[in-house]
Amino acid sequence: MLKNIIQERLENIAFMRRTGMQVMEASRGFGSTLMPLAGNENHVGGMYMGALTTLAEAGAAVSVSTFLDVERKGSAQYIAELPLLDKQNVVVAQARVTVKILSHRRQK
Image 1 (cartoon, rainbow, N blue to C red):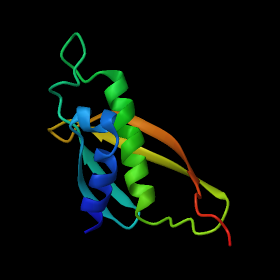
Image 2 (tube, rainbow, N blue to C red):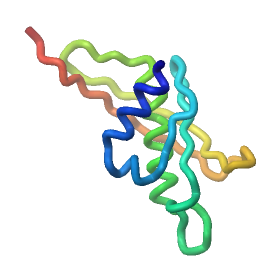
Image 3 (cartoon, rainbow, N blue to C red):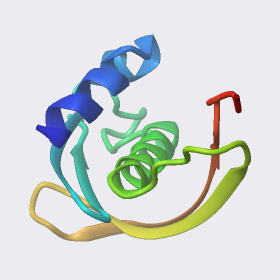
Image 4 (cartoon, one colour):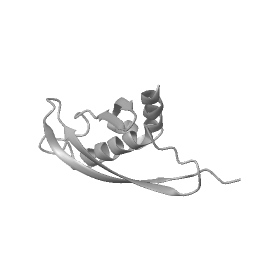
């Protein structure tokens, strides 16, 4: 299942594991991630801005990884605009993330 593959990739990054982030949904061109507030809060009890930034970056990466397969040498760029929601589904931030995809496959 695509969701599980992407979750496994996130968990290979120690920082991402520490946030407790989970991939909730992954389908072609769409990704949904969830990060718990506990452990990611700031001094006033809201989500730390760095955590929100990480959530936006991961959300963009999840969605782009569902449809891009860079098979040849080169790169691609993708701009994701996504809302960040609280547990009541209220938009608390709007993110614009530029993702650069680099091919690591060597040409024969």
